[in-house]
Image 1 (cartoon, helix red, strand yellow):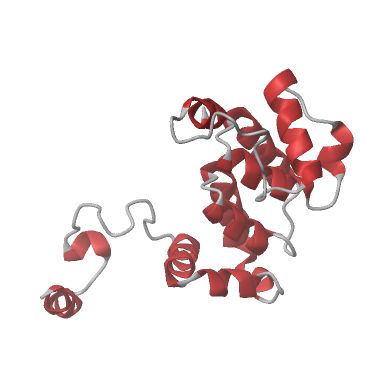
Image 2: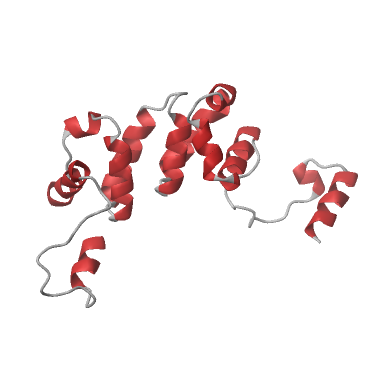
Length: 172
């Protein structure tokens, strides 16, 4: 879809000799093209350091849904305490919901260990929205609606009457 739109666009110069690709490394783009033409990527490429991460971002940017799902699945298989925080940020950036869900599920029972890693700094740098989502998930609070879900009663939220009044006042 991405390239179809690009090549059929009236904005593109018909006399152009090529299409410069500046946002993707050549080895990553080679695998992207392999996927587009054959539906496959080289096994060695999937094992190369950081290739899956870069390929996921490229697949997202160039709208290659199948490749994106493949990369997500492979990245989910290799989650560790050391890499899960960085992969969570990657999932957020690449709009990779399956990877994001897997990361959150992994973090939940391992939160203390994950928060002690270098990768946790990436989560903190990504912003409060992601931090809040992680904390809500770890604590078992709903995370899906980004604040746009239905309002709950004080009883449903587990609040006392006094807490409910405070929450009401905050909404004003």
